[in-house]
Image: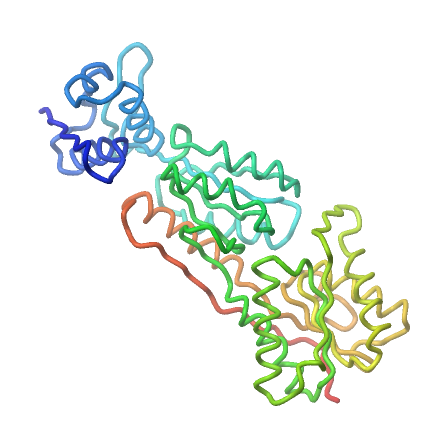
Length: 367
């Protein structure tokens, strides 16, 4: 059984996508059967009036997604659907962070029961290296990718390049403002809202926020949600004080150091603060060290809420109240969205924002 490919050079849809889509449709409709050999690249190029390079890209894309298989010296064949295997990439900033491992576990759970093999690429907290990994993503090797991108908008260009190439990917947890792509993240405004609400309910009116870097999407959302909640409660905005690092700190040996330094500076400038919000786990640990050095006891002298959870916060003295990202759920949903995008490249973009979770422990006291 054969199939005729029709390419429209005037259509907005890229030639590679037209050809790969028609081959995929032929496989699904059984006009192309399992183990059937496709015409040669040269013959398809001649019949469709397109370059051999375009044909090769389309076929490579279908090989990487498992629809076709290439046999050296023999040609390209329709794959047996029972043996079809797709390769997906998961690009991570590091595997040394507990919350990143939770995302990885969620992605694996989301792919359970599928024909997918997951390739994990970790940059070990080197944003330039991660950008290079993102640039090298190609449908010749993987069908798509889930990407936990660098924090700063300055690292967005490689992601924009992927969208321009039509490469299927989903952003997870961090979403640069100028990248148009499927994304799954926590509701960052809600992170700030829930932390401030918890403190206000316990009578705190002088609140501090120690942040990572002010221009990251998460930092902006947390501050936006925190300050809005404070204003809507009827309290003057000058009574909530924020301090943030001037640049991203990637200290793998002492990741808490910047949080300790910023907390000490904030409390020295505003000694009337009765409660602190730490914008991530490392800052939370640094804040505890600063409290200890200043002989402040939690929660009798100062209350603490950390944005993001870690197993260490369950065993601190006292155990620490957190507003946590639903990391495993983010990974699971990102996997689902990527499979949907690969199956239907023209579907509408999905922008999923999941609610955070307040985990109440013992680091917040009433005033």
